[in-house]
Image (cartoon, rainbow, N blue to C red; front, top):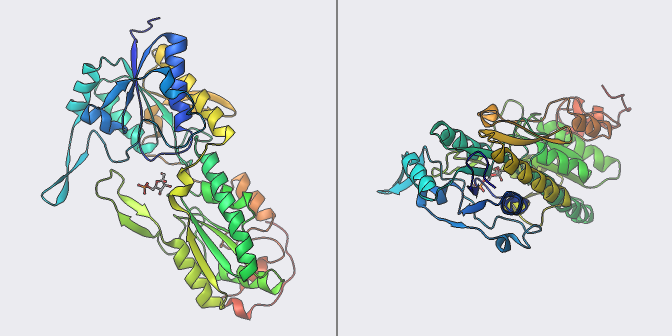
Length: 394
Ligand code: F6P
């Protein structure tokens, strides 16, 4: 069946990988072939495959048995921006616009449309290609859950489950050794991952970029817990968390990437500051790319399948330039450029932040509630603090 002149579509996975990508690829390939009789071309390594002309016609057997596997069978790349492609030349990175090559390869493969699966960088690339006349539909992915216009991105649920599992495991060793354990989680400039994983595992302290922390408040919570017989503290720290008046900690710059800044190091700093301020033995752990791997949760497989189906429906309806989203429990779509240059951060009054505060979670700011609240907020030197009466939530 041919509709809107569409007979052959390309599919690619751009940006960093995340659990559920294979569920989306499978959904696009099977919906395209079985439901609409399309040919589906798999583009290898995100936009890099379009730049280097690496793609192949896919067969349904290629996507058989991949629903439950992490990663992406097509490969991914978070560096190949067609408008600003990084090339290593004479000992340094230079950039070149390779849009013409991309368009040539798109035409040579007789692609009528592209389904691009990716995060903000991939969607910026999609917008660029749309402006150059290519027909594109987007599917949002990221473990960070920081894309606007969608309630959740696939991959986030699995990453939060993985991070919560790691925090659970750290609980037992922290308890055995009476230590403060600071676990650094991904998420870039948004705290969704640290917030959800922290709440899921009952972390005592959650540090996120949206709520700058005071190290004395965090240290006071650790000391207060010790005084009440809880001789360990679990801290879930988003990699973008930073102290009030301070800055996010940059691990390194990746000059080959369109988004070169890589965060990292906050857990180490927080752990050493706490140990210095309180004398409590403190350790840091960076969970890193483990959060991007593994078997997707049932939620992510279902969401990925629904998004994929809808993406192909949009293509067949000729609704190019749209991004499939999940809002209010339903699949919907918005223009891809609606998310350009925007990120979705955790609102200070997010229901999950409020719920966490109600059960006594410390965010390292002045608004911590519960029996240990005053200890965490009034003392500049946590060692001098004394037990105080509970106060009511704000
Ligand atoms: O956006 C996903 C993400 O995993 C972030 O949470 C993290 O900051 C970044 O990618 C790491 O990127 P890379 O894989 O290039 O180190």
